[in-house]
Image 1 (cartoon, rainbow, N blue to C red):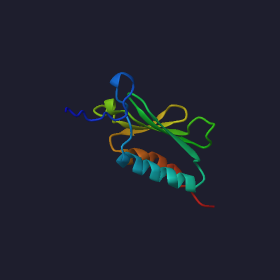
Image 2 (image 1 turned 45 degrees about the vertical axis):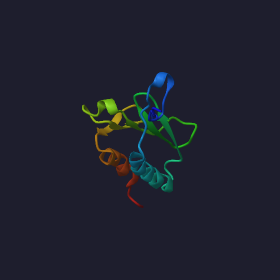
Image 3 (image 1 turned 180 degrees about the vertical axis):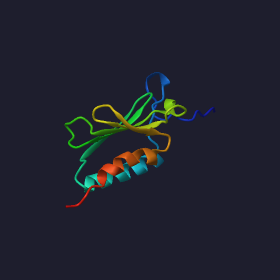
Image 4 (image 1 turned 120 degrees about the vertical axis):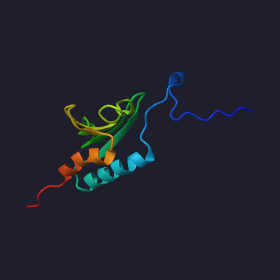
Length: 114
């Protein structure tokens, strides 16, 4: 009997989808939890597509995402596979180290206390 290993997230016609690994989701969800505790963010959504995985953050679930954390493995050797994209589509930070890329959002969490 010939055993074929399962393909992660198989799509139509056997195409694979890009997804976040557990080790990638840990820092993203940690940051998300801190923003929720601060009252800034209230909802998130995860999309896994053929060439990109997206973690979208919302202030309210009916709005457009405030930020998108994207993983594009094809850009790994060019600009970096991780990117933080703002609401207007502007790339705020891009790189290969996810924790370094997420620091652009951590700066927004720090604010002066009156």
